[in-house]
Length: 445
Image 1 (cartoon, rainbow, N blue to C red):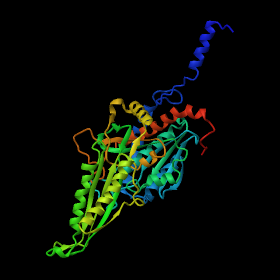
Image 2 (cartoon, rainbow, N blue to C red; image 1 turned 90 degrees about the vertical axis):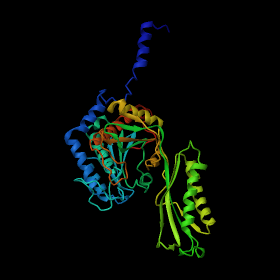
Image 3 (cartoon, helix red, strand yellow; image 1 turned 120 degrees about the horizontal axis):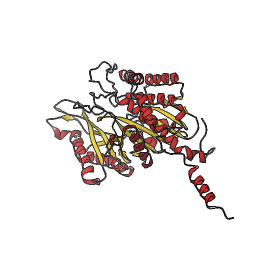
Image 4 (cartoon, rainbow, N blue to C red; image 1 turned 45 degrees about the vertical axis):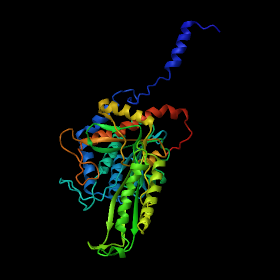
């Protein structure tokens, strides 16, 4: 059939233009390009900011360690109730999982950890920890406040959500493997991707940092009891000295890194505990040593574990001692490396660039620290980044796990807005994909 040229042109234009709904994640449902800034302005409003800071301070004053976050969990549920947000509880003892949106696919998760550390706070301020020997020295109080802030933002802008946002409030990140137990309890059911953040006092407010691929190392703990035969220090020939054996072990473990590890494959073995009972003139019966080991690949990590045990038992035997080695894989599960998804990195840079400006995004080098967010990344694509909560002045802010740790609370508004923007934008980007497979692969809540 001979079709006139102008009709052909109209058909071609229709074919190319009909599906051209913008996939720009900065657009709202009505095409407004100002959504990210709108969310940030909302988060920085005086009433909202003061509410969120108040939440953080309540949690900071009453720190709770892993799997004991009962009051923190109660506070979270109270705030979700006020917002009219549905949630499941308990998961992994104290965990809470909330839901905002349509209850239908796609699903994206935002995560915050809740637990504190066994540290005595040394920062003198009005909201210092009221619990002796416990402190929020890793910023998890701020993480909870920002995720509750994001929940409030999302609730106020629910018409922008094209799917379901899952709010994951997780216990026991500090060595307890809370993320793994949350997964086992079904926290990631139907979820397609997950985002998490961590406060960074070395970065000024409104600055973020991350990278694609390996970001944080996998980690594990070990402890060894090296047993000999005690006796008087003046007659060592009648004893079997476990202190000498343990000292040999400590030195030999460092050779794992300097002489066995590939210099281009970052690994760490640190002995951070060395304890023995007795007096100055008594050789003890036993010595206990302990520490941590870290690597960026599973193969390197498992090789370190094997060699640590071999070196401890071998060096103890050389000194006529016996060694029992423990890795606490049940109490303190090995953390996998934190590896950021490449596609989610592009999404992060786009959203953060729209919200903060491209110059506020820092590309960082991998760190040997660890984070149990990595358990989520073993199941679904995940992305983890650092949020500035320091000052751009000369004032020095201590790094995490310090009794002098503190943050600039102005950073909370940026964290909550980033959480909300990352989720809304991700769902908008995924909308067309899920429409094409509607009715398959996911269940409604």
